[in-house]
Length: 459
Image 1 (tube, rainbow, N blue to C red):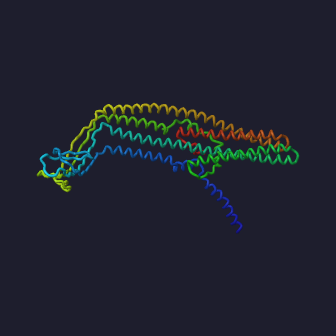
Image 2: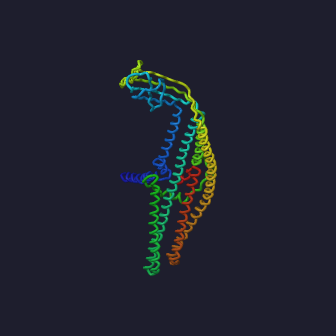
Image 3: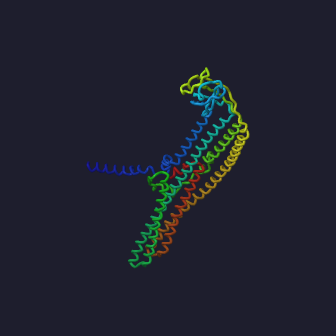
């Protein structure tokens, strides 16, 4: 009974270990890397801050439509040679008033406080177009962020593919090292037995050492590729072994997906909203040349050291005496006639810029469509090349195995076998490079159609 329980525990342990090991490797796919970049990369955060700044600017422009309320208070010690009257001075100015028939001190204290309100009732669409221009600018900045994120996503994919490429080259070269190591042992044995010359042993050892040196090169390439990728997502390493099969043996993209038209590409939207911003801004400049109609109001409290009996006091406390209150309300029209020329010209200038941007939009759209058509054409031929290089590699591996057996049987010389081994090595390198070029083209196409689903599902 005890033996049966032990066997059950042992089988349970054997089954749980692979499951646990698999769970440790769940965060090693391209979508997981992108999610980490999207969350932590400071470049995207900076774009978010720019959007927030643009939204605050929108609110500030809306605030310009609110009544403008101003207040001031002042306490002065001044002469009073002036005419009497009620007025509302601008902030920063002092006022003096009095009569020539006064007696007493030459200087008199004054106290003055006022509040004014100015509410622009009608601006002929200037503020409306200014607000729309601010909204267009916010949209433009938002799509700049989307375009940046799309470019960053492509950069993550390209660096990820570079890691796969360097690791595949290293893995391929390690296979080559093992083949040459095995061949070196065999030639050494045959040389000691007197069946083969010592030159064969030296030639095999030379090829083996060259392969070891090549190994160091690809280790350096792999480490460099990892460093470039970590710059985007952090210092964590991922297990990419299970991705190599997909990398070297890609499935063909669906035809309907590759031929779909670009939908609202962020770079196009940036140009479109730039044009819209310039149009609204130009209209706002033109409207600024028209008059402004405002509701005006004010209230003022004044104290002075000049009494009703004509006596002038120079004491500071008397400056709060003899108060007078005044108020006004009315409608004012302001029209800067010079703006009729200058603002119109500024508006026309921005409208011309908008026209230029509109033409650039058409040119940019045609350019993207041409790029997409060219890339899709290259992808279809590149996929065929991947299949051909894969077939060539399989045939080269089979041929090497057969020739290696002939060499072991003494039916072939070493130099011929090494030439065949080099052909196998070239076939491996060609297949890896072809696969790398295929995935690089897919990355460019994915950015153009704003869709990375194929890459995320297969890598």
